[in-house]
Length: 488
Ligand code: NDP
View 1 (cartoon, rainbow, N blue to C red):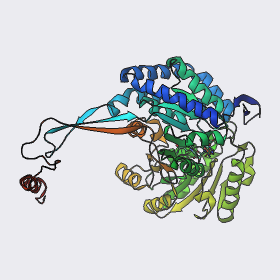
View 2: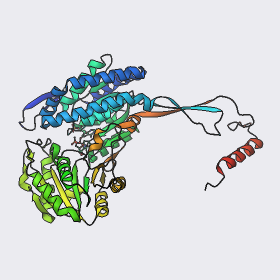
View 3: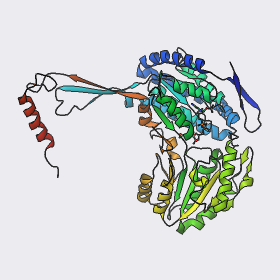
View 4: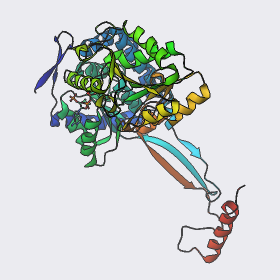
């Protein structure tokens, strides 16, 4: 079998060598997952929960070596790698503990016309869930799908990014310590073709894709052939709004971290900043003072994917045509690192404002008021997350609700991602469907509705050819009584 290497993006050293699984190997994995999925779904919910909590404990005990592997494959500082694993553990814990409560069988009200029926609703597993993940948060991001899919009773076949295969393999390896009987969670490594073969397998019940919008479209096209549903977690161009009454020191601090941490390679990272005129100069003073202390290679790692450097450079080049440099510039790109770049007054049509940059760069623009900031924030094809800084909770909540995104943080940045009960996902070019929370569990299940007749309603047998005009007349009277009155 052909193989490929994963490299340390800082030193170029080989971190590991992995098989490039071709279509037949992917088919085998899905076949095994089908059987394992049946076994896993057949376990009592309490047993699945016990195994998943055990897996959580295994991951927690391996926190340091997992973080070290993430550091090697992505180049990010160990602290950041640790943080993403901690978040993934928190989500796994929530998914395991809440799966039965959210998905388990329950009775639902049958209404007046269904008086003689009982009804139950439950959410059953889909079978095999294919998870295709990116490299930027190689634990937190795929585990946001994997944990919820497993907790919902599915088997998982995971294709990690070709840049971070080692950590993907390790996650599945450690799972076997808690679930040795069947290959409930497998990892297949390879290049784009491996993911394509996985998405195209008709036995896959759902594809959980996280990556770029362009690849999501290709994956969706492959899924269309089999009508395989997909949850698409794609890129973003998140906006950060600073209102006139914001705590500017805190806003600048959060803005910098949201934009520069992980070298800006965060789907819900800050890329556009809109600041209300009244506080613009003061905010910029806070921002430009703080940014001098943030260093590439120290506070954040390299650009993991070499090809991204050209995109970042192109965005900076174009932004400087209309905008004014506050910090950095084209020289900030010195592979594999990019120093922080802040550019103000960039034309809203510039790629630096419209396209995902995925680097430690931001554009900042002054706006008349928060309403204008919101309109500019919403004038994007993307709609993943966003931020509002304001001391007025009511106003901030109003702005957050009007932001056309899946998530908004108020007076903090990206805080929604760490709350397991909150769903995560976007609108528009940022994708659709949700991971995390109760919605994230239901995403990997099918609703199963069952109605049972307890007794025949005398004179009201509506679903029979023996139904007579009298029955219809009684139905009309009942419906008119129940629904025909105008509510005041
Ligand atoms: P890509 O779209 O390049 O790749 C994502 C995954 O898809 C990789 O595993 C890749 O494999 C695989 N793949 C590539 N081609 C195909 C194909 N034809 N069929 C099936 N699978 C395929 O994204 P990146 O890895 O570069 O990740 C960065 C992107 O992810 C950014 O846009 C970022 O915003 C987004 N992202 C979104 C998140 C969210 O939750 N919304 C979270 C994190 C990142 P290979 O690497 O081997 O090519």
